[in-house]
Length: 121
Image (cartoon, rainbow, N blue to C red; front, side, top):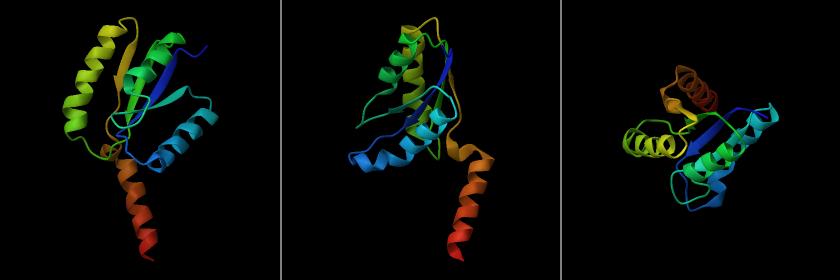
């Protein structure tokens, strides 16, 4: 049994196709052996709370939330901390960690820049 897991946390949208890239990231991580769930802020399911509940029911003790956002706006600065407080209250025996937004990582910025450069050729 895995004791640590990842929740990929995305915004959500009305169009189901919008989630496809995030599902591919989830599936790639799973194929590498990671325990991963995909959760949404709004408009889609599962919610962050629902995904956490699944992992906790499996005995996971450490959950890393990875926000699939390019920047830290209102959702990550205000809404996510509120949800994290609730998760920590509701699952006191579990450690919840939050990574920075994707766009705050130099590797991601470099990858996007390289992709744009290739597309301009």
